[in-house]
Image 1: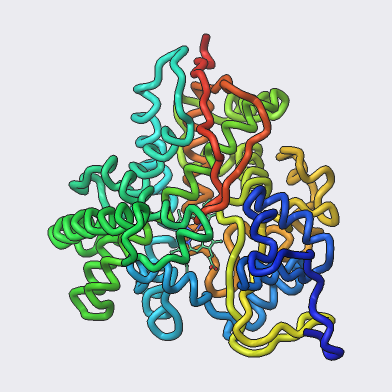
Image 2: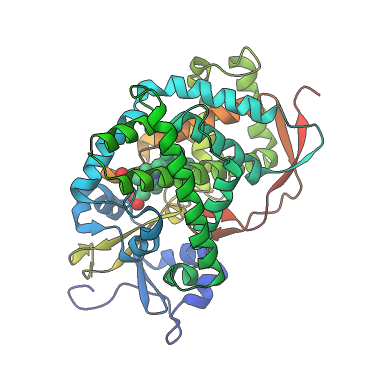
Amino acid sequence: MSSDDTPPPSPPGKPILGNLVEFSQSPFEYCREQARLGDIVEISLVGQSIYLLTEPEHVSRVLAGEPERFDKPEFVQSAFDPAIGESLLMSSGDEWQTQRETLQPAFYRDRMSEYASTIVETTARHIATWEVGSTVDITESMQRLTMRALVTTLFGDDVPIDQQTVRESIDHVVGRFGSVVSSMIPHWVPTPTNVRFVRALWSLEEVVDEVLVYGRTGDPDDQTLLSLLVAADRAERLSRETVRDEILMFLIEGYGTTSLALTYIWYELARNPETWRRLTDELDEVVAGDRPTPSEIRRLDVTERVVTEALRKYPPIYGIFRETTTDVTFGDWTVPEGSLLCLPQFVLHRDERFYDDPAAFRPERWAGDLEETLPEYAYFPFGGGPRHCIGSRFAMLEMKAMLATMANQWRFDLESEEELSLTMDLVARPEDPVRGTLVSRSS
Ligand code: HEM
């Protein structure tokens, strides 16, 4: 509330339900529309107020300026607790600090060339199975690819896990967050979604145990994420539960986000022939062989802009949630302690104040000085401040290397070029499968 007790603007709602009905029909469009009411807008979902913050300065304050005044919200904590409650993503204070320091070496810049070679090799093996004229569920294909690359780079070459089971189990775990309602029902209530969730967790716990056994037999100095975790476990710096949650969290967080971004990239490339031409011109000029080398990948500027633009238009993590630990004043409004804030990338990344024609997919917008002139936090696909994505450098490299390797040989003709309708679960995903027919670039 402001000092004169006027609440932030909010759309009119129904008794009890608040804005739930309109929100559920089309959550992204609804929030974008309501964001026009002001730089803080209160949306009410069955008695739960969510404050949308759409001023970059406010976002900066929450993530980077005074992060100690904003916690991960209680509903996120309790929803994730049974799965990854002890992991880096969910922990706080000294525990978070220890985990971040322990895991950081796996993401140092000097590890990236090594990862690039492995990612390109994994991608080349993946596309070796593609056949001209066959129709592919692009999301599913990108999920298989990113899971394989994640496991190989972060855990080791021949970790003995059944990746399909892992992907299915993760989908069930994430499926619990498929709607506001299902994520709010405690996991021990035996709804069909919760039963699948609990079974999937058991199965993932078995997988994680196997990964750990494998990790203990590996080279302790190879600095993979797994060997760092095993060393921390041995030194009792991290508890066994934390190590297990960590592995699970990396599997969940690391594969869903990048595979979705690659899906959106393929979708937009198929709809934008001019962008496709620019991308393939660059590949033809820079990549000498049939797959890019690490130093060639570094020179792929158009490719990088395609990835950057995809993360702008379709940020897979569409919003970051925080809870105020004290009353906080943002401009004219004071938001009370315990309020739920949403920092919505999906609104800011399409804000006309910062981007011309924001609904258009235009990678070339990043070719000039946009990045320098853009207010900080008008673009933040990887979050910001101390809790920024630890995997951001890895993710950018992965998407660039995979795209360059695939697009060097293949493109997709889409089954449908209609505008994508997105659903809001843990990530922003297409409501319907995105399918395409494979076309060889050499034909
Ligand atoms: C396109 C790909 C990705 C996007 C858009 C993305 C986005 C994000 C965002 C927005 C956050 C901040 C969450 C918050 O502040 O509440 C985050 C945190 C995190 N991400 Fe990512 N991420 C991506 C890929 C990855 C990958 C590939 C990994 C691991 C290999 C990863 C691991 C993590 C971890 C561990 C955190 C928690 C960091 C902490 O709290 O200290 N992410 N990510």
